[in-house]
Image (cartoon, rainbow, N blue to C red; front, side, top):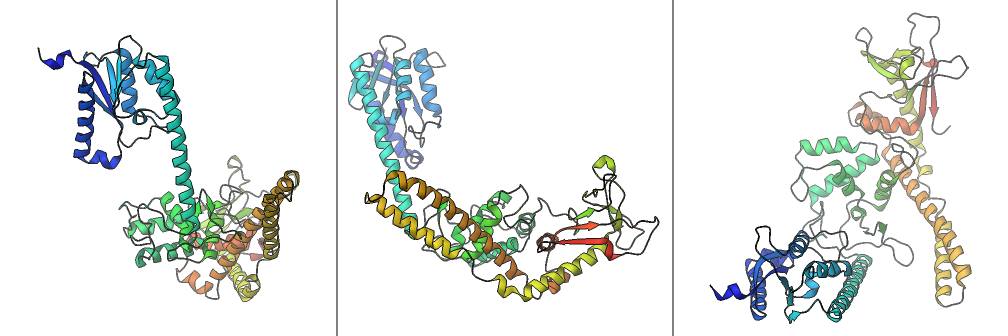
Length: 495
């Protein structure tokens, strides 16, 4: 019989960082320390449990090795029947950092009498209440230290954000490895995508184009809709920084400019932010226009509505659908769905002719608006109020900090100003979106419309911006009649 057979069989637990775990020498050193500690206290290790690079301080994080060890300790044997009479770790804080886990460990280890526990300092009698209490006290101290580390980390992140210093990790798409200088081809793709989205192009069409051109993320993966949206929504594109879901601002409320080259202007990013953050309705944008989950194949789908009166005098108002009609010029018609589908089935019109008429009317309206574009580009009207409230809020804060203002007065008034300031910032963002949209509708909109410079999503976006709806009145009299534009009522967004 070997001398090791007289040693108490125990399991060992280790939890080391990912970098150390990838180093074979680091793992060997860890095992050597445990082996030497075990031999010094008359034990031999029969199994190693590890949870490398898993924090013991996070309540929602499961450590598989730790949980498996508790089951073995409570049972007193390994799954193969090998006896286990205790456990050994290098340091207590590598085993547990939460009181609940420490209590579970003690309960499992002391489930039977005669178990042993040791760390680098030697054996510890967990059956002794004083020792257990000291262990609990150590866990509390360890947890407090974790909180301090987390606070220091958060403060460090916040400080770096306020100084505009790029964060670590993988380089962002559009920038080089230094995270400061631009990678021209990627940066231009992002800039063009932003301009296209502002002009009404769908993310889906941009995504298809990038996939056709085999554009990859910085990790070498194909782009997905969510990753593309997040990339375009990142304020880093215009030089700003977001921290804890809020833009990082200086004491005057102005967004901090980062130490990297920007790809788009702040106004362009504000327009993107307004589009993506709108939550009025699932498919209604911040400026009240409607966006499509997918791009329809025809210009007026969902926009053209039936104007035939019902028995109660109200119009049907059902959105018209497209049906193929090869015997007509254009090959399709807009028609009201049947009663079983929510319509009246009593209206239909040549689709190509309706599209042609509405297109000309919309283009004329857009050209008229482009002619007075300088009026749309006027300064936002709420700028003075926002500046006044921001200054007033800072003054109140200073007085409150100097005990010149009571809590009863400060907090209610400050809350009112915060609510109004948020409203004004939202209005400013929506104004920026309208201005950016107007800047895309220039005098060459007609040329781009007919030269395939605009895809269907962009055309529909322009139609929606100009029109609330188009009402199709019934022809009457039965039979086919010549197309009559007077039976189309255009509801313009500007009244």
